Image 1 (cartoon, helix red, strand yellow):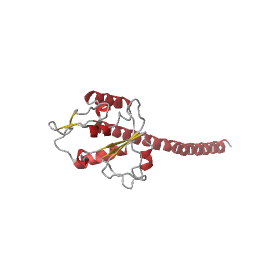
Image 2 (cartoon, rainbow, N blue to C red):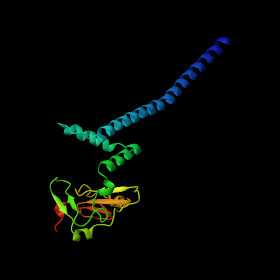
Image 3 (tube, rainbow, N blue to C red):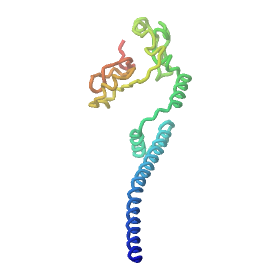
Image 4 (cartoon, one colour):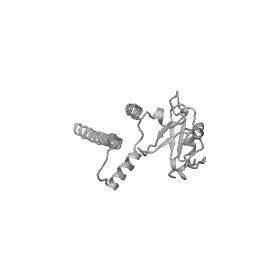
Length: 205
């Protein structure tokens, strides 16, 4: 009787041990996957941080491996956007100190006078003397004078936005800058325009 009881107890223990082993296997498997996914996310974040540092430093290069550069740029473009407030403010102060972009980005009636000599950006010798006709066409002041903008859209003229359906997103920006009198439409590039740049070659006076 005692032997039978011991055998029954031993079998019960074996079942419990196997059952617990199965439970442990199922219990640890999800954690293994989640830690593996966490490790993958960590590696992806480290890779993106490395790419951000790489593409935030602009320096001349004697030679460029185009394939490697293109692959790195493609990886960088697929990284999630992360705003760097400190770097943004440093860049803002640097631009203001070196070129006063907010005060002399383009000509206005406030910062330009008739008969004032205007140097060309691409030439150290050529200049233009502001005449009354062109001066009358200048805006009174910068359109963003006295206010900070939340979201800006800068739209080029290279045609990359064709069939992109980005028009509504561009029009939702607080301020839209367009280059070189490019064509506009509501589907791909939007209709809202706050500032247009014109290449000197497009001006015929």
